[in-house]
Image (cartoon, rainbow, N blue to C red; front, side, top):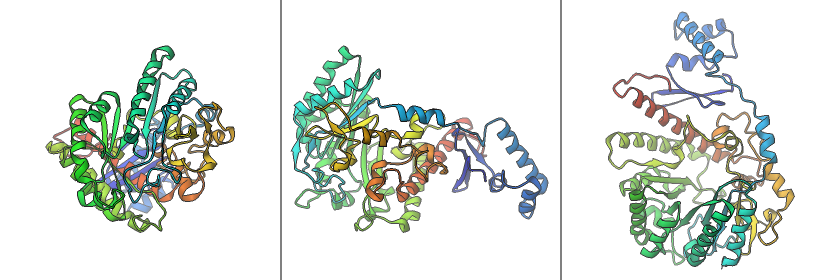
Length: 468
């Protein structure tokens, strides 16, 4: 099969994806089998391979249809990436900052990559003077970009709520002068929320990320206080209040969990959250050394893949019935108006377009590199970034990573998470294989759902497969 397409099946649905264009087709059994040999064998050789299963005339007809799709550049398309790569490697305009507003946390979640919120350093809160300078740094290094993003992160950012409020006010005060528009996001464990906080965040945050791991017994086994007690009962009402406001006013949010070896049946956690009325849900795989007892391994992949398919089928069922419908973050791709070509090649922009700032003003490529002295890029008060680190990240894209150019999923995952690559493999350009396999399955499920939804929209009463 030519490496410009990817075919797969979920249940009785067979799909072929054009890797370069994103075009998707629902196909029948014979086309699915012919694709194994198309472009590699001559027509008569393909017929010889498959004549025990299909009539030669039918095989020839399918080959003819594939030839037509190729000739019309509807399938097996080509893509010239070099001009885009040159622009990526030359671009250094910053448009987003993660402010680690608190290197402290009131919880002690077992899987926390930030080491209980202090990133293996001292517990401290970001003073407003640092946050203010970080905002100015973003504005002055954003060029002509109007829409800028600030993510409040931790630790637990609500431990430093006053600085959050001061930072928002200061950023807003710069908008007219510099022709900028700030968009704010906050990630919280929800334990400190009160009505005043909830109302402030609802008014001022463009997106709110609410941390909960699903079912009470799962959440309380992992997301614990320092004394080991669980958090579910203390956060669930707070989350409901936030979600009710966001749903009422059409504002962005999502409840975000993490699955581990302890809940490989994480579909049940997704459904639990949906049954509570939460419509925007993300449950992420934990990332850790395989020696950690909560970390799953390659042998668990079949089970995890099965769970993703369960989520996909349940998504379709609930959407059709209208009973507790939900969106799953990892299945939200748009095949028809997807990310721009630059994002498809270079992913999140960490170390180039997106940076993280810690309480003392030091700058890192993103929050997941925080605490590693190798990746300190500078300080907001110095206003100059370390050129060697900048250049490393400018040159990071799918065509600079050895394994990525031949991978069918390259334009959907864009090379994966560079921090995970480094933390697991010690090399930002070496993809984390376990994450790759999960990503591929999520993409297949997302494409499957997109096909099913479009087919239903085009012919709701016609069960026959068609193309999308």
